[in-house]
Image (cartoon, rainbow, N blue to C red; front, side, top):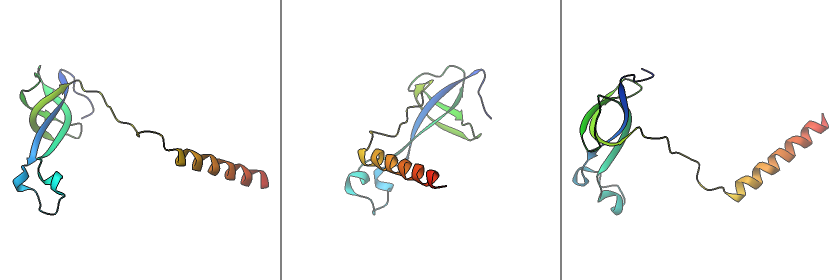
Length: 103
């Protein structure tokens, strides 16, 4: 499945494990909160935020949860620039240019 014509692209969320069900080998602050997942996929019809729906992911899995967002954007990035990595990239390019000029 690569698209969802006639359906709405939504993000749902649901709890996989409650705090009492989580492993004891976690840091204290992590153990105190539920293990929660967010999944994007296609929901039938016109779902409302907060409504429980079943979606179909782009890989064809059916997953049920509460609608968090309708038509969610992709909001990922690589964080703030790290000066050491910028410098390392410049140095690497200079070294490669030096190797090319030797040939």
